Image (cartoon, rainbow over all chains, first blue to last red; front, side, top):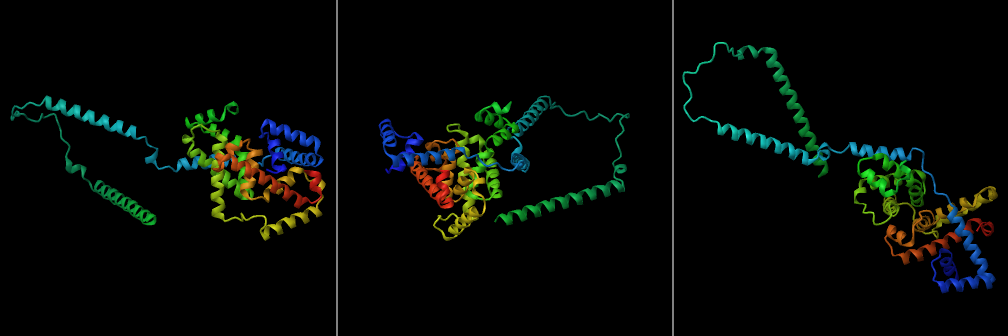
Length: 165
Length: 193
């Protein structure tokens, strides 16, 4: 270890007590070592005094905006908590099971009452009247739009898959 | 009020969904992260890009921060790896000062020094200039040691080295820095350092 390295150790406070003592006395007695020490000490003070550089004013804003944009881009699938989905599914399974159990428990196995008649006060709607031309046209139009939408989605997915491969 | 919170408390708040806490963390560390990035990138635009990338990466993996080291040490290790990747991508000139082009650069700076009035320039300016001429690793070690308030062990963690290796590298970096200062300033260096 040369004298410069020892002096840096001394300045950084990284040397043992006996080494510290030895260097202190060298600085006190040897002119060349003292000059070197003061030179290094000045450099050390200069380095300590350097101020860190400042990024642009909008730096923090840009970082937070980038984070917000990244979070907004997350697919909805990733944002949904799977536990909530499972909870909803469980609710429906339990409800349907309970209804089925209740229904089967109350089924009468006796033959149905053949003489049962529809009460005269009950008027059933005429299906023929509901199927007017505008309704049919609307239905066909909706089907065509839905078909185009799904076809477009399928093409996009296919394109995406081929670009990944 | 948030500025009084420690880094760890701000991290907990951020993980709890409070983005304002992360804004505070960014504000707290941005100057040093930017300075460290500048040691690698040399241009302010690239340094800002690296620094921004680092804060985004840190946000993404904040949940994996164990708190075993200082947040700054963890963050600086992200800066170091991001900056190294950036250097590899951009293929910036990371050659030694012995490179011919660097000599030209140094000579130009010296002649600029002759033209301009050196007395008007502060010691920090010349030190920053000389640090800018060092190899990225040397510049980063000096910056981490003096500005990042990092111990040799922490610098070792950041750069993936042993503390003793960092110590030797720090010594050599300071030696090279002194040489650069002397070369840039010739006689005036004696007065400045």
